[in-house]
Amino acid sequence: GGSPVNTSQQIVEALGGVVLPVSYARAADALREAVRAAEPEVVVSFGQADREAISVERFAHNLDGAESEDNDGAVSASEIDPDGPVAYRSTLPVDAIVVALAAEGIPAAASRDAGGFLCNHAFYVLMRLLERERPGTRGGFVHVPADMPLAELLRAARIVVSQAVKPAVA
Image (cartoon, rainbow, N blue to C red):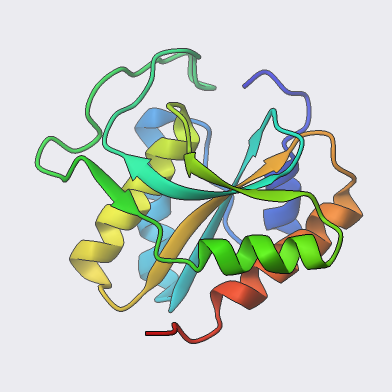
């Protein structure tokens, strides 16, 4: 997205996760490879957005937006998976994550969707993969501000993950 620093990349690297390329053509394969290798019970994806607060996303839509070029110079304004559903709902406890962040003084809100750029693309690919190959695995997406200090972002990410791994309440 033109930022000199990607705060979500800094978080993921600090927590020992996998950084995906900012590329429509390469992100999906890298994500699938990482999930298949890790065989996780929960997947929390992070992306950077021009927002004031941590945004816990509710839905991933089966449509890319063409507003911005990715790092390979490509734009996409098409369905992500022509055979897939219109949208997926996050299987993370969105509201519990927001409450936990706010209780620690970290600005946070639930967000309707992950937008139309690569964050949505990766979120949709993740949820499609989990549906097809790991139906018991929960997953979701969290946007982080570009200008929040790294120490606060790491504290927030740890809270997000701790809430995400709690057993689901029926």
